[in-house]
Image (cartoon, rainbow, N blue to C red; front, side):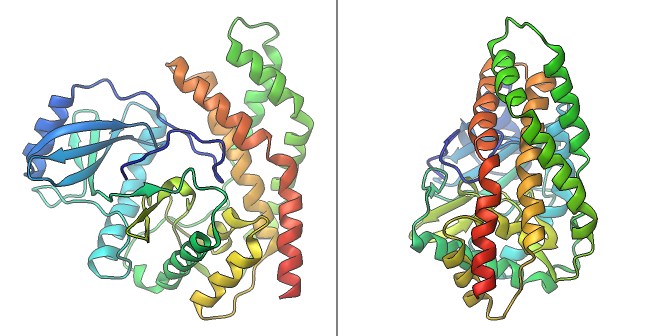
Length: 361
């Protein structure tokens, strides 16, 4: 994890980035890590990545390295991240220690044998550290990388029956964000003149695609009842298999950041690979899965629409109501421009190619 990329336009998936470190002394964090985990940390380095927590590399005087996530309970988005800890920390700890999946990040238990540590309004979680390079700037993926990803995805989907003891999040096909998106568009429409250049750009670019956005919203709502009736197998999904959550180390692929782990239709993970290389990716996926599976193209359509619209909503809400730092808003504006608005028109073309492949195979 030595090379973390804060922002790249080439990424397959949009991701909200925390570019500004939390206002706390490094020595305070080091002292608490040493006291609660029994390690001898001597250096902590902020990493501008991730969306629901602040990220750090922790170096110890014995050469050991750890990855730290710091959650601020006063932040709404990070508070939701804390809630998800209950689901994925025990999952990944057991997946690793039971030998079900070895190439993953998993939590380090503190001296009280807990997965997380609470300090005032902060929650700390320590993970194993993986030396290597993320795939955040490796798009488009090579065929070799796609094979590794398809193999890892198939492995995750095949271990679903092992996770029954864990209280996992299950897909609900939630689209409640659509109300916030409509609200944000209304706010932009009501802001006629603004000295804030970020708001000015949002007005021009987002309102310029207002009709398309509302068309996609209608599509998501119309698809909702249909996809809820899907009767195919539900599997354990990583939930966020974009390049920034994958690391190549010693020519092996490691999967990090399991915060979005969920039990859902397999299309939940597969949708991230709908595009020109879908055919080779899905063929490889089925090979490693060692079973014949069918794909619901309408589920892929629903997830494609929902993913981009929900990202757009999150970034708009951040800029309009959450962010206190202009650098963060600049980052979120770029994400809107290069991870949402420029992709809407390609959704149906990508789905058409996927459907053609599935029909022919």
